[in-house]
Length: 415
Image 1 (cartoon, rainbow, N blue to C red):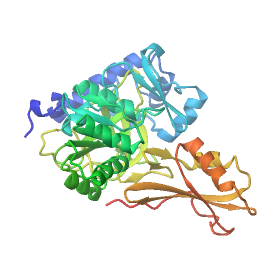
Image 2 (spheres, rainbow, N blue to C red; image 1 turned 90 degrees about the horizontal axis):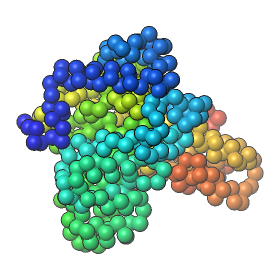
Image 3 (cartoon, one colour; image 1 turned 60 degrees about the vertical axis):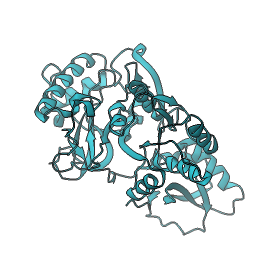
């Protein structure tokens, strides 16, 4: 059983009743402070008939579900925050831009995105040299882990994505103990280490942004003699849940309230039933309440032998609706529509997501009104500009794509 010395925050071990009381006090404090500065929060509470002065956790299911896919539209109507930013802009350290576009604020407090407990649970410690291979460009993933590593007292090497040869040389030169990134990119780096035939100094790894298959984790841990943990996060809020050493689910972070809800009605579902993950962020900077993430999960049964007492998400089983996550980036059919609108010669299209050797592949199939010599390259450029994803483009004969087929198809499987 874990003690206070085995966790980053003693609150991870508190009784469930104490956690509920602590979160209720935090919720009321956040709402009371934020409602005057956030017209969107005020509107959500008024729609639910909830008083900011008396709001409780039991009131959350009355608040209308805020669908993540609607954030871009709402921010476009009231740029850049859609009315959700509740404190002065001077309290924002950085503004990130995710595809949509969706703007995400980073507050000035330490470890704003909340990843320090997750990294601690995965074995990262003070003084560790860690390569952070998440992007530091536009989207917040790189900053999420950078801030957490700083809070832990680790030494960060901000490598970002790409440059595999440099990544491998760097981790060997600086004797890195830790490696952080998406599962697919971490696998690429470690495969390159294997090709060189050298034993790296890596002992711990951490992944997020994509599903981590158990076959990939088992293979990497066996070949490289390291332990790899994982977490569930979203760009708007940061850490939602994380894995402990027992690997019996993902512990819900103390900084959020998570519900499993009916995607259509927003009604809370009993523990054990599959539904959409809805999260309320206990932050008076960006107090998103009941944000429907679009991810499907359920609460894992029983308690965890690690001693942490929070509820656990069993895992992420898929997505609600049509959006999918490719190489850590959400891809919506409307994003593809925007790219194809630049090419009127495209009569019909279908994007197909597959996976080969633990890497996501995006193929866009096109039907055109006639022969097109350079269309493939032009469409690939448009897809990358709109979605930030590289795609292989194939021009197929008319009639290949049925009129009722989905524009975005995910053929990946996860063990």
